[in-house]
Image 1 (cartoon, helix red, strand yellow):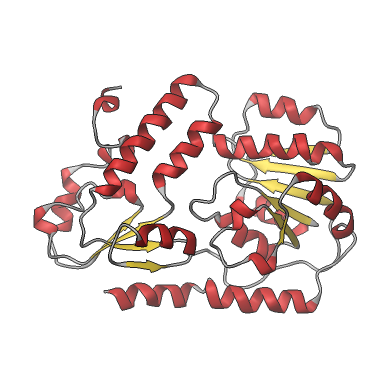
Image 2 (tube, helix red, strand yellow):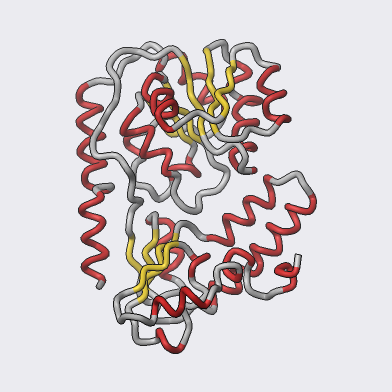
Length: 302
């Protein structure tokens, strides 16, 4: 509760342990701040001559505004709202010498209006190659952390406007689904919930699905599950906000409204991935999302 009265955002102030500063001062190496929440000491005078890179996972205050809209609990909604205001103010006061490594082209354009040194650095991921399965799957998959308000809102939206209006089998998978979401899923006989699957189980669900459907209400940041779906799954249906700034539009079916998705699903349920589609995925992902290539971007900076 005491952190609510601080002007510095909670996610930043609670990472202000001076042991971290002591460790940073033991050498003169470049510093990579992994997310704005790690930047409490970024403006410290003893670090003013260091090379400092902020890996911006998203536009944090926009993300928190999205959480505000998705949250139903009034206390949490108030926290997200005030945190968004604090984060926007905090961002404006980050040190000018900070180099911003933005995770999408859209985010990079935003940061270029505010910082003099900005690079586009696509997301790193744990996958080395394509693992898409041949043949045709029997269900549509939506997956994500089901304890996050934004993902809960997306799941409910998809059930209400798409999944509940089709006869195809649907699997919704993710961590810690709320009881209200579980009850809502149970009202639809064509939808099955896979709660708290292991990493191995989740990868199997992605690979065996005929369609991976991904959705977001806000375009800030990058959804790593898109990379997972493209490298491991078959067809991907997304909405514009989810894929914005990723450069992966040509690898997905981008639908602008529920009816477009409802019309598309029956056609995709009977079509296997073609060799040329896999080749296109391999070429675009290896160009834009190569871990080695993107690591070289960081090396070039330092």
